Length: 379
Image (tube, rainbow, N blue to C red; front, side, top):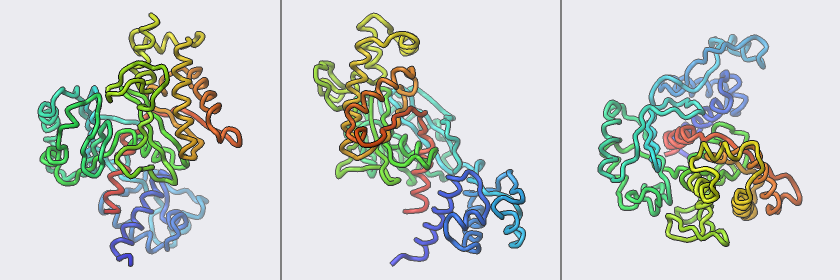
């Protein structure tokens, strides 16, 4: 049987989700959207405002806005909208990246464009990394913030254990929970980096529906959003599309295998291919080379290989929408069009309905806030 505390927290979560989806909303609109009574909504809103989770929006409700102003006047409430609080620090977020570590202090309402307060190059040892992180966190140590840490590789999100991180090997030998609890305290959450990007995309575009997100950076990874939830298997490993083998590819991957897709379609993989053909040696030079000229054969083969693996994932999961982030978002439109056509050739649903494939910016911080809010109102 659900306890009163559990029901209250679920009601709070529904209110927050509705405000997040609408941007700003009146109490009467909240009542209609959630199906709760006006007094219940007002009581929850007052509590969330006292906790600096909700705040009054500067946008005033105008007469005729779905009757909100009239209802507010009857109840004696100011004709103002509500939004997620943008001022009070609530969360600390840390991205442990292959090249850089980034940190930010965020309110409940995070901008959907990532902005980082601190950044340093990710060191080659755990001790050096912890030292720099401790220094950056020191001004915030006593603020009792919930902290979310984004990790690369194969990650057990419950324990923070990293089973495999080809690009940051010292992570595989580190007890992150003990080490980071000494810095951030007990309110500590771990999340695999690509899964955070999928959560962030859903938070930014809540009407997205089900989709497969594929990200290319130092490596390549995927995450599936199905029915509003991240797809998770029975082991702490999912979405490792970058480690599908490509026939004929003889490049050795950091995971220890030969022929992985990410050795071709990751940012370093694409640069390596361009350098082999004497066409570019840096990422900006490659983008310039690919813009406004016929696509080279090696690029078509690479995009075709990626399309086979993406279509295979769509066929297995029963999805028809693909969101591409990271390096994909920076490629010229002609490359994405070619990739889209190749995916449709291999995706079964393209024979019966529509398959959509588009690029989007990375929204890591939006995903981090979503995770932190879930912990606040579920656990």
